Image (tube, rainbow, N blue to C red; front, top):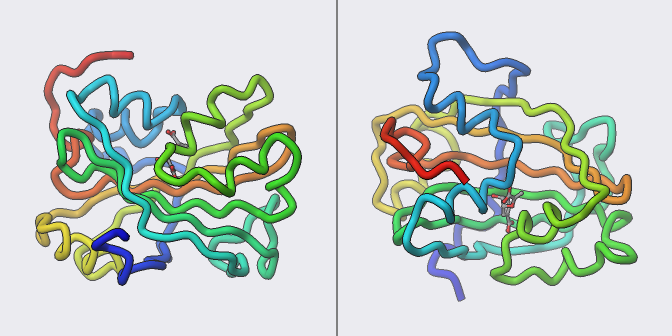
Length: 193
Ligand SMILES: C=C(O[C@@H]1C=C(C(=O)O)C=C[C@H]1O)C(=O)O
């Protein structure tokens, strides 16, 4: 049982934008707009990688997460995880997996456990990723309790992104927030995968 389970669901109600403000550091921008697998990039830049599941439950898509592919009120399996590199929290991820998408070969996405979602969907030849949106989070965001629990900085602004993946033309909504102190904010040379 995750020590963070009591925080689930954290939800992400943010002011999502279609473009990254000019003022954002180019290094952070590179992580925000990287369309490749985040799991793979984190693994390439760490000795150890770990995924912790905060929780999963069936719920309804709400207004602020609805999009052209998943309507408000659609039944979804919500999954929230933390990705760690060398035991340092990197990413809080919240995914909405519509029940109507969890069919056929994609049924396995309902039973991922600690296997990263990206490790499965990026192996699909039919994968398409729709446009990324970004958002800035502040200490007052709902994530601040998570940051407190993880012992992360309360001061810094931090950024996230979201996009829709289509696998066999079935939509999956994925939002990822780079937590304070993550590699995404450390402008140093990294391994390019
Ligand atoms: C989509 C990816 O999968 C990652 C793993 C997730 C999970 O297991 O729930 C969710 C979002 C991503 O951080 C990726 O690796 O790019």
